[in-house]
Figure 1 (cartoon, rainbow, N blue to C red):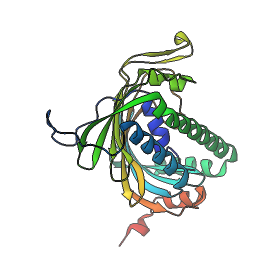
Figure 2 (cartoon, rainbow, N blue to C red):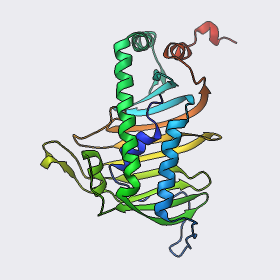
Figure 3 (spheres, rainbow, N blue to C red):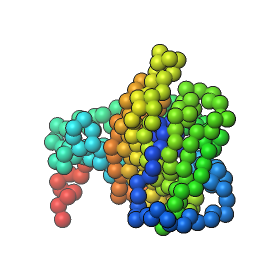
Amino acid sequence: MRTLPLATVLAFCVMFAAKPALSTGPTHRNSKRAAPRMSADQLLRTVVDNELRADKEDQSHWMYKSIKHKSGRVETTEVIETKDGELHRLTAIDGNALSPQQQKTETERIQKVVTDPDELRKRQKDQKNDSDQSEHMLSVLPQAMIASYGRRRKGLIEINLKPNPQYHPTSHETEVFHAMAGQMLVNTKENRLAQIDGRLIKEVKFGGGLLGYLKEGGEFHVTQSEVQRGHWEITALHINMQGKALFFKSIGAQENETRSSFRRVPDDLTLAQAAEKLEPRTEAAERP
């Protein structure tokens, strides 16, 4: 099981409406738009299908470095994906290596995750619920939105999105589609999502606010990159949301993260094996 797949992130972000994507180069008001072979609605459906298929079929697992801005400090962690979920180890705070006591605390936390069956079952249940929910939201996106083409850039094309007045939400999550308008960037070679940026353009209340709400002005940014031929991973994630209707357990309301140094690990890697890989090297092991 892959934790925090793009399907989950995209579904989470799409709920909060998109604003124009950040420019990747100079554009001109009178620049010509390419004539795509398929309609924008068809391309949106193709991209969504590709993302859902990749999350289902790509069982590869990766190890990478994560840098998060969190609670006024910068945390650097090593993260490993396994068949039983994700495992991470804090390695630095504000650029400084952990003290021996902090390393001991991290080791004890990781061992509890690895050896506590109740904790493992809870993590797996949360991830399964998030995955099922995000898959549903992504699958209805082409029906909930009307797509049109924006400018074509080097290897990328913009898709403009606006609410489909004919779409009738079936849940609180999909109800947010009615507050959504914006754009995404698509990699035209692979028909994969490359970037989506956005904000919530108006407040959304559920049950008149009694069942939850989302404040206007929430922002997000997600970048996905091909880290190895045929393998796409999230490389940047920024979410800043306010409200009481956050639908996913594996994504926080405030996230600011970059991911790098991707390297593949065995597909059948266990949590225990991942814990070993995350163990800090001893001084003896670090000597030349």
